[in-house]
Structures are given as structure tokens and as C-alpha cells.
Length: 624
Image (cartoon, rainbow, N blue to C red; front, side, top):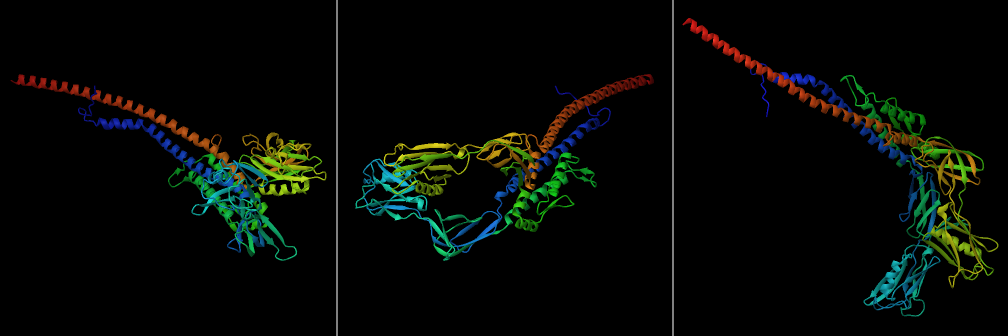
């Protein structure tokens, strides 16, 4: 049942207005809470904006600190058919003649057949020999279409196609997927093509690209490449040739444009963050109002840390203004880099020094959590390179096959008449260099072969097989043994157990130690305490560490300050909601009282009216 309220009908008072004012007075406390909530929401927004800026700066600082990827040189070429790329940080130049370009081996059948279903292989398999590796390919019934499909499915480094030279006339063409002398191959087992002699003829010879340096001088020399790309013939320069031509000059010059643009972008974002801090913590005397983070010690501390870090590092090109901003002078940076590229990179990235005897250790990489300091290095186990030895029987290596296997890669060489161990090692080294397997071969005076991984560590493991070429069986009387197992280095940095990969030790990034995330390359012949490495982070590394600490999702002080502000917003909302209920109840109570008052006044007025009527009636009777 709806209660009846009377709004000053009897009293003549504006009781609704009176009630509203009474409730409004009581609601002042709620209004104050709402104002405080608005302020805290503004603080949450300010924190969010700054954390977004800091997140971008963390990424930028990580990139800038990785000085090994700085692009500080540009390349030029005098020929439109030669493209050059510059790497490193030094200027260089090279003039040469292109005497040949790389080509891929290609074979064509010496005869043709009249359909794709024609049989071109007498047996169920054909054999592909390439780079000392023999691959048996199952070709089913031996039809031309099956041979093409089988070769392409073998993934053996060649592709095949059935070429229709005229209606009803087909030839088989097979080409290497790579270029250079190493692309040469042979196919056997294809006896179905008519004609005498070899069933597959050379259509194009696999050759290396070659350049000649020094012209016709007595000291001229040549350089070859399995592809048309030559890398580091001149330090910091690589180039790709396109045709035979003379008098080509490629060069590189120091060009810091890309790096200075990168630094400028970082400085712009730092200044935007500093401006945001200044605005959010400022007091406006005209409006008598402060920013949403006025008096916030966390953001003020961040502002001071940024400015003091930049001012104290003396980084080339960077200065701090009296107005609390960072400036970058490209000309100053360029001059410093050209005179001392290593020192300039260290000022932005990081550097290290080592004090020890009969050993060395150098900084490889670090994370934002890695702190500057002196860290003792203790080696408990040295890195070892995998090594195998083959001791042939007295009959030597002729007629035998040496196979080196690493993962899915295999290199084989069949020792030919006249080959000794030294010749086998030389041929294998050529094949290994072209394959990039990371193994070297050597022969001693006794005719024994030794194979060694070029890099130490367990990742360099490989296997060796020494078999009879004709039968594939192990060579009787030969010894094939692993003389050293590939092993990773083991040890500690600053007393923390480090992870070893090859000869690199790394402190786990999750460690609570100041050296967390530090990786160092160790060269030592002894175990035990080999010395101390002094790690010094540069500007980008230090600022990256500062920003990461401030924005860490779990422990970041700026994140915690934002979380506190969010919590206060929720708490204030709870209090505001409680006041809403309280004021509604108060309104109901006050309204009821005024309603009761009006009812009482109405009753009194009725009584007054009755009495007045009574007395008026009595007076009239008396007069009569």
C-alpha cells in the first residue's frame, strides 16, 4: 500500500523543498566521497598512460642496448648488376672483376620417349650421387611420370620434370636446387631412353661464382663462392654479383643516420614521459588545483632517476636541460662514433672487463634485470669439442668410404685410387665448408684421420662411419672411436649455478642475484676460480632496467601505486553506495515526520473549525 505524503497543504510550508535541503546537508559527506573518487580515477588514468609509455620505452631500450644490431654503415656499388650490403661499423672498399657467376648443375636425358607412361628405368630404384652422398630412390614401375614424382619427393636437392619437346615426345630434365660446384650430381639406373652412351647428359655444369682481385698484377688472387653472394671478402661488406664484368667497385661508409633516428625516437618518448609526470604532479596557483598525482613520491622518484641517469652517464650526444628534459645532438654523436665506435656502443649498450690469469671472459649479453658489478667466475668443467678418430688398416683408405653424420645431414667421400689420408681430409674439408656442418678433418703422418667439431659443446655432437665402398660393410681391422665427447662448460657466476651452452655461461634470468640474466663467453684451459668479470651497463641498458622495474606486473612500484588507486576507487564506491541507502532512509524518515505534522495540523484545524462553528452557533441563539 502506497503511503500518503502531504506537502504543506495545512501548514503552508514547502515541505518537499525543506526535505530536499535536509537530505542535501546530510549528503555532503557522500559528495566529498564522490569528489575523492573522481580524483582517484584521474590518478588511475594517469598511471595507465605512463605505464603504456614505459612499456614502449622498455622495448625501445632493449633494441638500442643491442648494439651488435646497430646499422651504422651504408653500401654502394659501381655496377647495377652487383648489389652490396654493409655490416659492422667500419668503412671499406673493394675493386674486382667478376670472372664467372654461379650456376646449378642440370642434366637432360640423351633420348626421348613417346609418353609419360613409358618405362625409363629398368629397375625399381635409381641412384642419385651428390656431394659424396648416395641416395637410392624408389621409382615403382619405372615410368617417366613415376620417376619424376619419385625424384621430387626424395628431397635430395634436385628437382625433375618431364619436358615435352614436341607432341608425343618427352625427355627427362633434372636440375640441382643449389648452385656451385657442390651442385654437381649424377643419376644412374635410367636405361629406358634410346641412344648409346650415358642415359643422362650434362645440360648445364654446376659452377662457382668467381671474382678476381688485383687485376693482372703478380699478386692478383681469386675468390669463389657456391652462390653469387660473397660475404666478408672485405670486412663489413657482402655483395651479390649478377653477370661477368670487369672493374666493379663496392664500398661502405660510416652512416649513423639509422642509429641517430633510433636514439631521437627514444629521446622523444622519454621527454613525453617526463612532461606527463610534470603535468600530473603540478600545482596550478591560478585555479588552486593540483594534478591527479600531486605529491606522489613514486612518479617524482622516477622523474629524478631518469634525469640523474642520463646526466651521470655522460653518453655521447645526450644532455639534460635545466627544464627537466633530455636533448640529443646528432652531430656530437656522429663525431664520437666515428672516432670511437666501440666506446660509443659501450656507452649505450654495455661493456665488461676481466681480471684473471691464463683465462679470459667477455660479456655476451644481459637482461634488464642484470645489475652492474664485479662477478667472480668459477669453472667446474671445461667445454669440450666433439672429436673422432679413424685408424685405417694397413691397406689404407683407397676403396673405403668416410661418412660424417650430424642430425639429418650426411657428408660422404669415396676414396679413389691414389688418395691418401691427407687427400681424403682435404676433399672432406671442402665438402664440409660448403655444407656448413661445423666439422673439420685432419690427417697425421701415420695416415690416421681426425674429425673435430668447430664449436665446443654438446650441440656439436656427430658420428663417423668408415665402410667398404663396394659393400657398405665396416672396414675390417679399422678403428673408429670417439676420442672426446662434446660437452658444455659448467660453473658459477657470483656463486650462482650457471647454465652452460658451449663455452657460454648464463645466470638464470629468474635468479634473485644481481647477475641475473648475465651471459659470458669463457676461454680457459683450467678449472676453478679463473677471475672476476666487471659488468657495466650503458645508458640504454640502465634505463631499460629502471623502466622494467617500475612496470613489472608483480613488483613494479608504479603498478603497485596504480593498484592502490584502483582499490581506493572501489572502497570509495562501497562507501558512496552505503550513503545512497542511508540518505534514502533519512529522506523517508523526515518525509514521514512532516507528513505526520501535516496530519496533526489538519486535525487541529478541523477541531478549530468545529469549535468556531459551535461558538458562532451559540452566540446566534443568545441574540435571538
